Amino acid sequence: MLLIQNGTVYTMEENKPKQLDLLLHNGKIKKIAKKIEQTDQMKQVDATGLRIYPGFIDAHSHIGISEEKISGQGDESNENTNPVTPTMRAIDAINPMDSAFHNAIAAGITGVMVGPGSANAIGGQFAFIKTDGRCVDEMVVLAPAAIKIAFGENPMTTYGLNGNIPSTRMGIAALIREELFRAQQYLQTTKEDASETDFTLETYRPLFEGKIPLKAHVHRADDIFTAIRIAKEFGVRLTLDHCTEGHLIAEEIARSGFPAIVGPSLASRTKKEVSLSDFKTAGILQNAGVCVALTTDHPVSRIQYLPVCAGLCVKEGMDELGALRAITIDAAKICGVDHRLGSIREGKDADLILCNGNPFEIKTSVVMTIIGGRIVWKKED
Image (cartoon, rainbow, N blue to C red; front, side):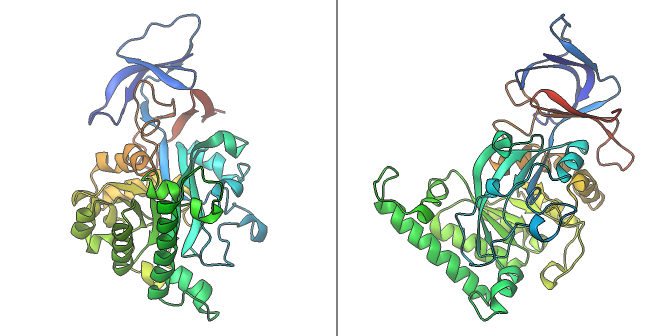
């Protein structure tokens, strides 16, 4: 058992921090109280003067798939031989030995949504994993966690420049619609335990059962609307990832009821559809009533700068508590893991970070990172 005493705890279950003790046991938060007496069975951490947060969450990344320091064979984010590849699974490409995992842990990022890139109209299956481990199967929290779809420039340039479909936005939408229609028809007539099943179309069963969302790569406003239109046509869940021009249509996104994962705002504006990228977008969307998370899109922006991105969102008008929610509990909700992660509550996973100040400030350091009740990183080491 690990006892953390005298820290200022930001539970994300309440709006204001409190001075609390935390008892961790068997990977879970066993007890939260103003004072917990230490016993011989407990290892004690004195958190006097420190802030304690739930582990931070990056809601969209390619960590372990697009590996740092390695090009070519180290980048396996896109199976760009076919624009429709729903059976690709992130867990088969994530390399836990990627050095970026260490950077994430040292920055307090304990959970990440990881999956294929955006070359294909339908790219494959995301997984939500923890950042500590050597075997990806033991790191998984939820897999599959989403099915990736992509609109805009990336699929068009990957295939259209070679004279293949999709070469237009209409082509992308048509491919996605056709595939979802085939899957819907198949699932309406086929039981899960049927003797003759279609491996590809079975991929969509959790989507149509409402268990996971489509994860839509969308930058431009018109692409955002197309993603919403298709999701509503088929009655499926959706997350709007990147949502670069979301601040232009914030009220419409709010009315759709779909959440947004905003970023990577720290990255360069390397293509036309991200020309309006700005740190103000997340705050405008949140103020309009949209549930918002943030993404570094690692390695587009390096994953350890997620708290910096949140701080820059605050600088550009986002509420500070809202920015914290966007990398903790709201990110967990959008990723479908809030029953285990995203806040400090008895019974939840003991994934915590201890900071010596406001994590949105450059001078602040993560002093300790705890995942599954185990200290996995200490600044002093």
